[in-house]
Length: 365
Ligand SMILES: C[S@@+](CC[C@H](N)C(=O)[O-])C[C@H]1O[C@@H](n2cnc3c(N)ncnc32)[C@H](O)[C@@H]1O
Ligand SMILES: [Zn+2]
Image (cartoon, protein in one colour):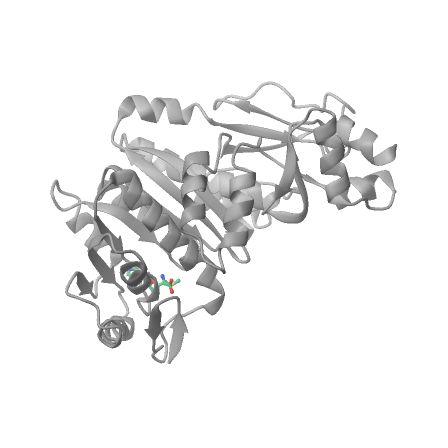
């Protein structure tokens, strides 16, 4: 028997359970509590890829504002496992358990009165095939939580897979996990826009082997149009580490690096606006626990920061100088009037609005 949060679970043979995904579930619990405050009511939830049921069971045990939850897995043994775990946790009758394909289950709930306030998509690999049915089954101003574990495709390591699954040209950069989250957000937003549903990323993190984004859902064409304006291209110079970006689906600037005339890498289309909303980040702090509070604090700190961080050891190795303390560089930048902070993406990374020339000057002087 395993314990996690307020839940205890048994893992049946052949059913998936990853103890390292605990932080993802802790953040999920905090987000659910925050989401119920946003809606000021109890929530109807669906976790269509449940495995042992641990995530959904924790949602019920650790948030007292769950109206109803549907758990589901297409594997028969997982289905039996969910029923067993619900029983040993003495859950009250607010759950339903199914043994269906998630896509069918979600479309069965795509009618008025049947839709959910929050759907949590937590698959193996890419979540893309579940996005269309999920967004059809969420109420206006509801929430969609999505995990992706195919980080090689999202970070430009498996380029063909990135193009196939996320319709984007992705390259390996010093801030590859941030590019990954932004590529994932962009692909999901565009799938939703086809259905005239606007998705706004309001909280996201990249941890270990997975990326996770929480979206607010709006059934609004005008909101779709304004959201799509924040998708565009990133230009990155591998020679001098300069970066720039332009919003919009057509790019014409920055094919060449404005500093060293090197040919830039062109990355996109990706999401270029905020990936953490400050108001949500503030609420999340209220619902953190001992495991999640570190990450929740970091996400709060970087909520208002510009996109794409600088990896200090990449810059110092380019300059052939020894590494400087991150705190020193951050302090220096702040004294010069820039915003600067650490990032959860990398323990060598700094987020700032200073440009690469300013940073190199600080490092060399
Ligand atoms: C990564 S696991 C879910 C982990 C779980 N959410 C947790 O936090 O522990 C993915 C699950 O999705 C199930 N699955 C995969 N494809 C599915 C589909 N099309 N419909 C329903 N379940 C599916 C698998 O059987 C597996 O149990
Ligand atoms: Zn350059």
